[in-house]
Image (cartoon, rainbow, N blue to C red; front, side, top):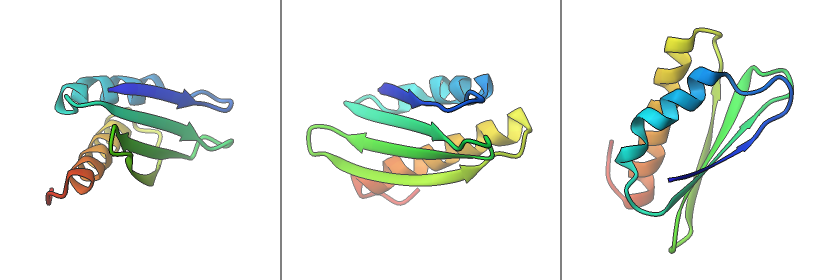
Length: 90
């Protein structure tokens, strides 16, 4: 999975990067992921696109400031977007 980070200041928390890396093996095909944080770092926009068919889905999560909670939230959203992209129910 190719990961693109579009980060404003302050940067996306390290725990978010690590959470994505942890589940990246669940995305064996050619996927592109963009993470875009808000200027106040209270939410992250997630864009997941599957190539070559170009199916693209996006969502937002609010950041709680808890590394564990935020990591679980982003993993859950990524899995939901993946299942939506391939036509399965999570």
